[in-house]
Image 1: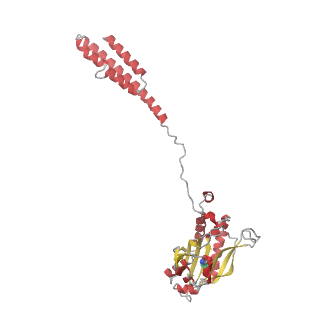
Image 2: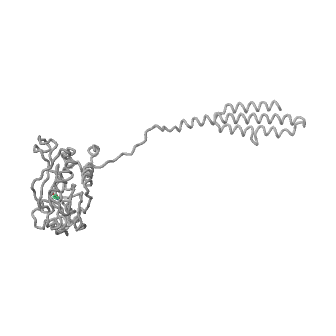
Image 3: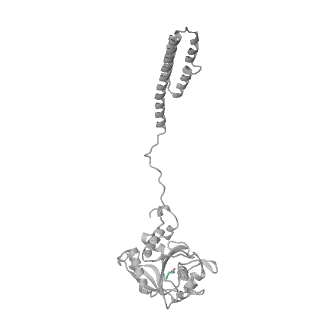
Amino acid sequence: MKEQLGKIKAEALAEIGNAEQSNTLNDIRIKFLGKKGVLTAILRGMGDLAPEERPVIGEIVNQVRQSIEKALDDRGLTLAAREQQVKLAQETLDIFLPGRSPRMGHAHPLQLVLEEIEDIFLGMGFTIAEGPEVEQDYYNFEALNLPKDHPARDMHDSLYITPEVLLRTHTSPVQIRTMERMHPNPIRIIAPGRVYRRDALDASHSPMFLQLEGLLVDKGVTFGDLKGVLTLFAKKFYGEDRQIRMRPSFFPFTEPSAEVDVSCGCLGKGCRVCKGTGWIEILGAGSVNPIVLKMAGYDPEEVSGFAFGMGIERIAMRKYDINDIRVFYENDQRFLNQF
Ligand code: PHE
């Protein structure tokens, strides 16, 4: 019996040593130590032994059981460690792999220019006002001293929705809306926004473009104040070495009216941008026509004001040296990514 036990032990240890997977060890455990296992069978047979032999054999069975258990445990640990290694190697995460960075957007060049201009006027104490793009004829024309038969209406190729409603042709109606809302208080606003004209799209025209309007109304405002504000704007936007000049012009809602030019970066030497003249036209302006003040509820004997309006695309085109207005609206990433 001793001999048999020795064989069982040797057999078990050999099998354990050969096991390459931890679940094989479980089969071996059942085979030798389980309820129907080899060792249990031996224990059952103990009844046939002489009484004095039983404790001796019992002792040996226990030793064999312990040896097998220990071998199973040791081999189990070895295999578990090895399997862990394999698993880790398979599931390796490369934590140094660069992540996928989100694609960053940025402001449109027209927005950049608009914000730069807005900041300059906000710095002078102007606030931002808004008005609707679908506008009443009254605000777009009538209240700006452009009655129905006024020839100056021809300058604006308007897009009408009904006989009394149109897409605003300029931001000047915001002057009227602000005056109606504010009178008799002083006003100092800028009004940026989209405007619409019945123009075919080509390199220098777009049926929709951006303007920025300015309006200041208070006691004792003079044409000199207008010149001062616009000079400051030109120096801040174009550079301290720049100057402005005013040429007589006509707008029904300002009197007197002027076209305002800024001196060119070529400093009068003459270049492609100023076409050799040394000056670049940037905006229209003037003192608010007393007729307009009166229609909007202000007393022209009490207050006076000035207004100006500029086209954002033209200013942006010159700033970034762009010669075709259409690139602003085409959303071509190769163009937009440059800003
Ligand atoms: N509204 C004028 C235009 O669109 C510009 C302007 C605004 C002129 C304010 C004078 C004063 O051409």
